[in-house]
Image (cartoon, rainbow, N blue to C red; front, side, top):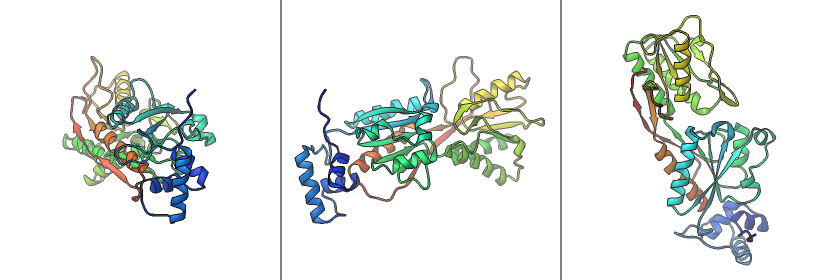
Length: 329
């Protein structure tokens, strides 16, 4: 078995400092004493550390860990497509993407991912939203981290998200302009930051047009730990539902049709993401198309910069998208 090459975290442990400080020292940046810089450079040389390409300190390539909770990752899921795009984008930049599926047990026990505890990953991209405390723990582990498709206002990591609030606002406004005044929302608002933001877009559109937001028309579609479940339909039905994602929207169409309602004649439906594409015979779904490639491109750019020692303030980048109106609503 080949000997593992030292990483910046290995040097940091040997010196007794952080990986970020090591990265700055190797990149010739300020932020430490001359004595500490000299100690880091000497330790790196003794350990056989290799400087990388294009001015990025490190190995000739970066090994970027891609972490995703298992409840979100299926063969034809939104996040499997995001993973494919991540690996492609990293490869084009000369880097590698290493996938690790996070188990519920790991999140509950606050166990570090293997890619972190083994020192294998130079940086991390977390896609899909794990438990909030777990995401914060990973971000504080000393490994450069980027949150993809979610954010945490207290997390010490960059975040890249789609324009969830605006997208849901546009879809709700579209239904209102088509004459709907009784509109519900389908999604567990507390499950993820993305669902909450999409709810807020719906809520804003309803308030803007002075329309009532009825609590009995806010239908949860999942528990806090994921897994879609068909919601209970209210006794008095609205004439339209804004759903937090396309999977939920298609589930609602099936549920409504099984209950004797016609879509969109009786009840209109909108989704979100424009993924996955509908199969043969599926109803064309009005939705908001997320710019997946744009999100992935910015996430890769952010993690490469962090691995190179960037110390700019952490922030959230919001990537736009566009509404797509089809037959369902």
